[in-house]
Image (cartoon, rainbow, N blue to C red; front, side, top):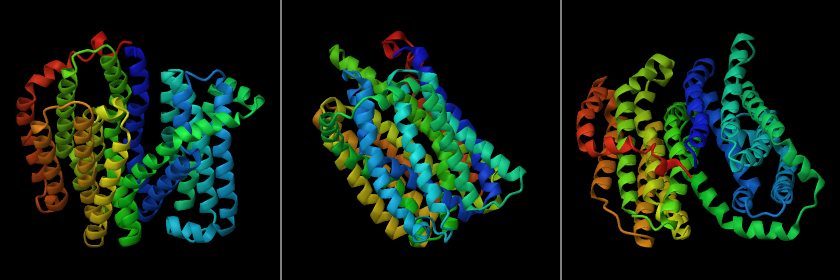
Length: 471
């Protein structure tokens, strides 16, 4: 993959993270913590709707894209089953909109549930159309499909504030709907030649069966990972309070900035390793890159711990605990990124069932800890449970890769990550008792981190060499 293409794919996550740094405080100031919590539940609902309705066929489209004799038939054969399933579930559920709105979002406003379904529909359309851009390596257009929802959502929030309309969950839902509709329209225009051809061809039922056989295992893996990410929010919804969920949601959204690291690394890493394997290169380089990722992950965590107090300036007083929670929350995407490096052997050996088992193990840990901690600690308990679960997920994927592919040194890897988790959880639990001294403690760690990873910093400067990113 060329450097220019990598940069193009990175534009979306980076710009999205920057917009989120503006959007999160805007929503926090404009809406109550309870409505912020409901907004988080709506996002979880939409992500589940996309996962459920696509049946894993989005991954089937990616897998068969380059091999398909007719890509229009492939697109239609992926979209039609998803559309039929969504319609079959959505239309009957409209009859009981009010009970479902109360069940999922904690509101008696029956208008909310149809809006949520409309968000799902637009998100499903956007998902398939953005994959066309991804597979054609139209990097900037794909990045735009990630950037547009956040930008439109921020504009919508600004209009809600300026026009002095009711600032409630329904208006927040409409803002989210506008963002998804915008990206569906724009990606639809960018890919119009593809879906217009797909409208004129016939669905290949044989291909549908092939796609579903391929995608069925991926559905379970996707559902397991969705459950891992959603368990804490669900526990707060039903075992604690919406205000605690609101605080947790804001902390998690700020921590989502680390997804930039995850996304960029995921785009580059797998193709590079697959090429190394195909060329029978020295795979010791995998261990070298893993240590470099560990260095970056640790530095990001230390920086967040040192400066998380800035959230007090950006957010209303109701979110004063966010500065402590975000230190634990950001470890979740960082540990996932690290597991992408250490667990690559699972994909190379095609033993992907191990990923499912690792996810299920982490999910079991998350569920048990959330049930035990959330009723007593609220948002703190949710962060503790999820962070420990992601550490279990990381260790599981690492060990599975070692056993299915090749051994690798793990002493420093586990020592640094365990200490990072311990420090983050200590901040979550005891941070409020230390004032700003918790941040001083994290800042004091930076010279040590620079020294421990001194060999990795020089190597990182060589990542832009043609051997790493050029195809």
